[in-house]
Length: 307
Image (cartoon, helix red, strand yellow):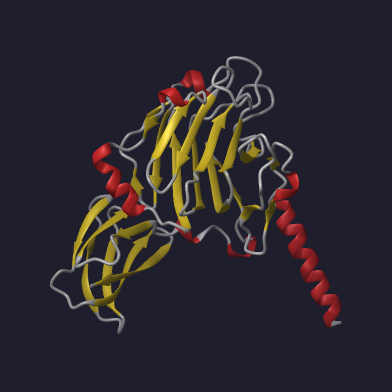
């Protein structure tokens, strides 16, 4: 009986994992290299197929950005997900495109690239006119917010006018990309897709939540766990360690934060008043503390170290 039970559990997992791939279509002959693992992560096994320097996987989010008749578009789309940024010269990229042609002369769409240094956007695959989504003076803030060789939390929002704003680990990239509706809406019968791309090698993504209008779709998360933990109080804190001056980057403006020591004793508390807020622990003893932020759906906790 135990063997039968284990077999049924294994079959159940395989069916659930495969179901998470049903709406996603690997490109460039890389079908066997994209999969969902036991942690419900979308992973790319690589290497890529020459001569294409990237592995890519496309989706319409089950018709959310393409109804097959050219009457849908990307405006009003919100994407939230966790993706790995590796400590090597690679990007975490996604392409918001509508004809699938990877060319500066025929491609239509916006290419968004994120790495451990900067985030950038290119219109119609033309890197001759690339635009940085953060100003030069804010580059240090962005780099401090990035977690290398770890998961980073992304939020990408497209408004009705085609303006794209991006947040990474609670840090708002301060320069929105003005894509324009001529890029994000079809002028002819088109198949709109969002393409997630690994540059060179390596890709991991999980907890993808996509919203448009009244529709919400969730991918690459454990069905038994419900919506990702990242839907609680999304925030981060940097630099860690620090001599006592930290910055909290958060979307939970108006919610309570609390700092405690490892004995559970409260050190400091207050209300998040902006998405980039100073936290001063310079008068506290060196050591490890816990910073928690209340959100609509629960509390999130980060460990911080004062040296």
